[in-house]
Amino acid sequence: MLRLILSTFIALFSFTVFSQNTLGTIINTDESLQGYTFFSPFNGTSCYLVDNCGGLVNQWNRGTRPGLSAYLLENGLIFRTYKVNPQGPFTSASNGGGLELVDWNNNTIWSYEINSPTQLSHHDAVYMPNGNILVLTWELVYEEELIELGRDPNRIASEAYMWSERIIELEPVGGTDANIVWEWHIKDHYIQDFDPNQLNYGVVAEHPELYDINLAELDSPNSNSPWDWNHFNAIDYNEDLDQILISVRNSDEIWIIDHSTTTEEAASHEGGRYGKGGDILFRWGNAYAYDRASLNEQQLFGQHGTNWIRDGLDDAGKILIFNNGNGQPGPDYSTGVLIEPLQDEIGGYILPEEGPLTPTFETTLYGDASGETLYSPYLSNAQRLSNGNTLMNYGSIGTMREVTPNRTIVWEYIIPLFGNTPATQGQNVNNNWSFRAYKYPEDYAGLQGQDLTATATIENGEPIEPCALFTSTQEITSPVKWWFNTLDRQIHIEQSSILIQIQLIDVLGRIQLQREIKTDDIINLPSTLKGVHYLLFRNEDGVVKSYPIYLD
Image (tube, rainbow, N blue to C red; front, side, top):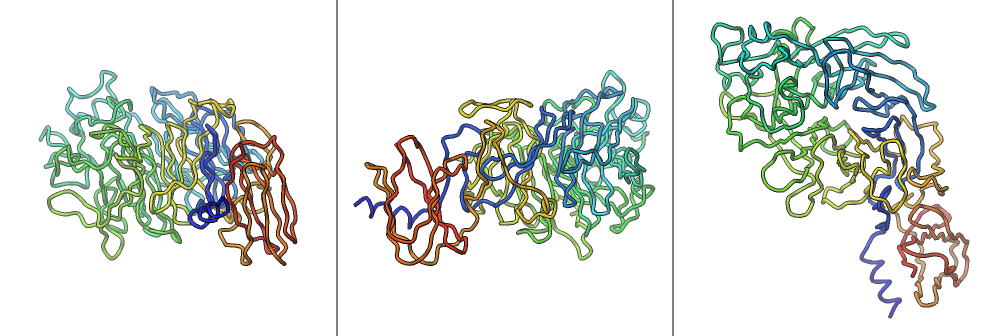
């Protein structure tokens, strides 16, 4: 009877780890991407690369907190922003100021700072295919110029300036220098219907390509909105289109602008591949911001981490957004949203004469009010993986989930850190926030030639075996009959001629038992082994099949 029950279980279910851990790897299945996850905790000073079992593969100790993004590049370097002591009045938790390229062994290859009394880099930057870097930067614009641009004087902060947004393209030079080779300023693309005697006067609804300088504060709390009107928090670059994608948190929108312009064209409304200069080519998330919908029709709420899905991946060319849900009506939950804008034959965007800009395709990949209610009010990102799954990084609760297209969780990891301090298994962690997290497949170019052996988990520092639980999703070609007797703790194996190897692995990936088997066998398990373990059968070709067993 027990054999029948177990055979039925094996036939119906694929192998999944549902560990008793409170941190580190919580769920790991054979449907997850076999690879390595990179993250840089918000309140720590290091970057980490872990395998699917939570084993620490590499750690970069940088001595500065991130400011805020970090990436593992295809050239094997990490590109990281970091915090400096601001010279100007930029009091946000999203401060940056520093940029650096670092090798696998934690050596600084290049560093540069954008930090003066009137400017500071912040949040995010993107490494371009040509080796240049696009950087989000705040710059001060003062009261006199703001009034000339059409801002209502009664809505200028008492400090008499704003933190205006600027995007610059840097060409790294040597080890500590850079040239600015292109730039764009939001102040060149305002519209206002407040004062006909000032610049930029017009009908807001007729110009969705421009930003309303008097847009009322929307529901994006805790982001210094009296000064930081836009609060850009993400940037991405599409080389094929030569376009820049921006997340604009304080108006709950994403924007696309043209990068093919010269700096002079970027300050105007003409020029570039798409003929619009530096104006907004496409925007989505809240048509109230350009007076073409009511506020209760908005789709994005405090979003982060927007990016184009790369070539070669499912849904390539579409735009993926982590919609935090900060301020949305109803229960608190975050979603992964996928959209595809309407484009013309050259990759431009069609702006309707009236009504909101709408994509041709929109869907929620994960997250809803009924059950998928994990919530991250700040930080966060989503990433399309090479196996078709999506990584959801809930940054402000330090949790990552890999989900399938049918919304099944196949890998989950909770960052096991209190700032820089490793936690102990069994603890409930806090202060483990992460602005971004990215998962890379085993064949990712930036990992080639490196030792990817994990010797410990972050949380305990305990030695572990290499994470090889899921080297293949193939079945063993020759059948192996087996069953587990829970009363006498015996594994019974019946098989004829094939050579197999059997391993028993615990939830931390440690091999507790290993044996080669050619004939029928009975394996007695020691009484010291407790809890969930995983039985692996491996044939001579290295093909693996895995099953969970529970030891009382």
